[in-house]
Image (cartoon, rainbow, N blue to C red; front, side, top):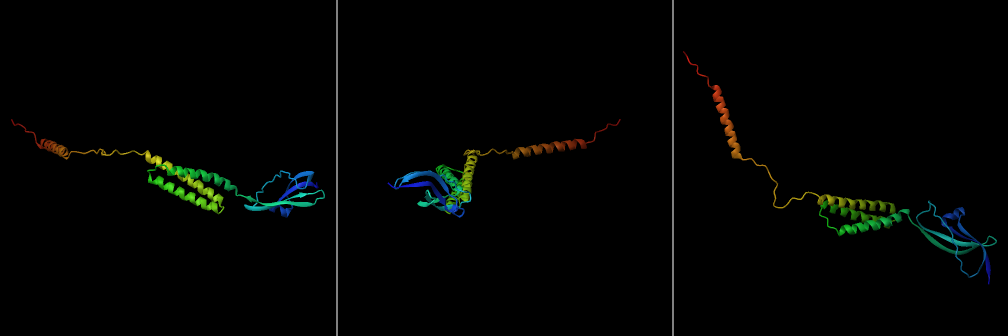
Amino acid sequence: MTQLYVEEVVMQFDWQRSTNQSYSTKVGENLTVGSTTAYVIRISIPGNASVGPHDYTIYYVGQNKDTHSLAAGTLQIHDANERVYDGLLLRVEKRLDVAANATFQSQDAKSWLRQARTNFTQALTLANTSQFLDAVTTLNVASNLIDQAYSTEQSYQARPQRQPGIQPRQETQNPVLLGGIAAAVGVIATLSLFLRSRKPNHSTG
């Protein structure tokens, strides 16, 4: 059986080629040609790596520093906001489903829900073009609109209810009674004036 000495296994991404960097794991042993062996290569994604596909190559280094290709492939780097978007999308969608099955009586509350659904649809469109940060912001707005809808409906339900057939009591005044009071006041005033205008009689002796 043919054996080859493997010093290390190397994995190199496209963002490392210009600086001749790579990730690797030490082996330092003879391997039988045609056999299968698993090795772990730890990698880290740099912060300046662009979102999207990145190609890589895997090769091993022999005893004389000779290199031999083993595999090649592509790694997809996702936007950090994509994971946030995925989780938030499920929560907002569930809340909209629950609200759709609820009975809202307030027209303002219904309006808030319609706006929330519009924002939800806008977030889907943004995510389809990989604008995940804007999509997350739009989903948060939709969630806040749902909160506003429930708050508005709660205030609407808590308002005082007018019972049918019962009219609010109004204070009325009897015009006849008022007329009688006015007449009485007039008589008293006239009598008082008459009494004051009369001069006392003086007897002469």
